[in-house]
Length: 249
Image (tube, rainbow, N blue to C red; front, side):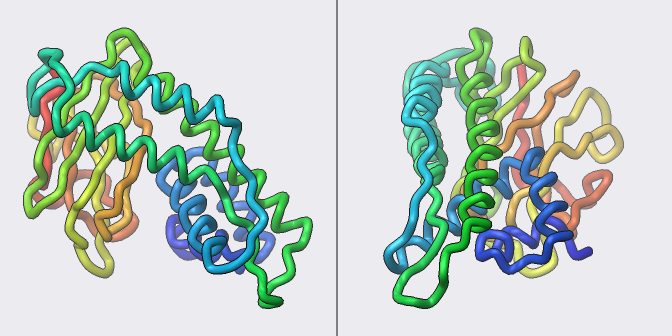
């Protein structure tokens, strides 16, 4: 089977077979990046013409946005809590857009496609997976010990990570990152004490185009959070210097 991450577009358009659908739906339960990408793709398709929409409960949107508003902001690379700043505003806009993407368009009109019950069921399953991921995001952002760090990435864009040690979890977001080209992706790492290229643990991947993404990942004993450019499919250890590196005090 091809790279599971590459099936987002085909799945959103119901252009996968039963085996691929089952495998990708299992993947959606664990991959927030693909879940949100499916939602965004279906929303875009729905805008092309009349559509049937499935909307997450409004309470989910409110809870996530309230959690974002409560999350303290720390300057880049520092643990000190601070007041709202430009990085906090970018984070709130990002979270709002991510939650808004929970409205899924499941069909297009003008006689081009007929929306079958299977399409609606697929949309509901994708919605449920995305809701679970967004609920987890809200829990991390609302944690009493949550701390947020933001840094500028080499080549442009920003990386923000919010860490809750009590939950052993972090929420990472990237925005405005440059496209790294065909065959490459951004890979996320949690890095304990030691040489990063030896001790780093892979915790996620993002699309190559630099579009915003939100992911929940374990923290463990990490002292640093890093982002590198790696071959598509990811690497077991970093093979390039980080384009972003954040100290998690």
